[in-house]
Length: 430
Image (tube, rainbow, N blue to C red):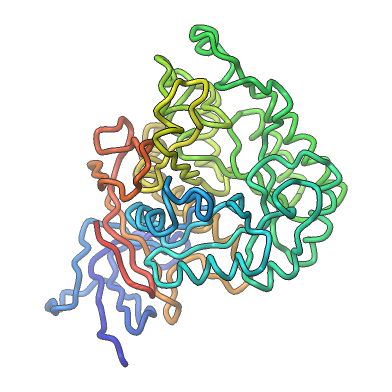
């Protein structure tokens, strides 16, 4: 059956390099594909038209790291709830971590994830377990997992054994798929529950210094230099870690990195008062580290920013700081929080929007996509886009059922609002 034609009118195109970038456009969608992208016209509106004046429109945002705890602890979130919250946040695809129970180390698990998300407005980017059982001892069947649809390999944690990382990089090099390694040495300051600094001392809490990140970053980069392949650090949190990655990029290494939106917004000072909402691992760092991360988000050193959506059950969250499970369930707010952090760093509106495009559109596609993946809106391609309005913050009530989804309209630093998302599977409008 032929679907009706939909026209999205007068939105400003956010697509650096496109001849209409920064200009008002009309986008026509038919049968789930983009039929045309043209300068905005003054033609009379039709019933199926949607006026997007004052909004920016870009290819759909992708979130490179979420945890819906499904299967295993669906009570904390679940796939359907998580995807609904992601659509609220403007995401058209998200990458659920592979450390579920059971973990995603079998082709059937990848197929199941794709099948379960097939009808949701927000789709999934399958990440497969790097090792069997995510135990870091034996590589998973990477070729079979790739054939099933896996786009990357990760145990959702540090790779403890250097030999495991060496073999993973070598084995996956022909496929071109990235290997994820968390930039954190869990054996260095293992009792640290927040960043080591004046605040950890004042609160009497065990500290985790930036050295725990740099130790692992330097080791993994040395292995990458030896083996080749593609290496990705999902979350970098320190200025020193960024410097090491920047140097490796200048050498021409196939290295990418991201950070969480929370590390761009907050610092260890926000943990004052034993604020359990701000407990993360790796922890929130110093003001100097946050400044370095914001600079890296604007200069291109960071390849993507993730929500790192980590829902918790009440039993995991409503307890003393030392034992509370770290994480924030913030996928519904990641885009406006990122935009606000870039503006707070001094970026102008267009500069912040172009950085947002790099971090939520182009960067994730370059990490997960194939040679055929387009990084922008293109006529003839499936309709997958996000509509965002700069200006006053307005966050939806999160569809997440987690008690640690603390971002809301009154949260300091959040700026702009997600108007909605459109994908071939449907649309969501806030």
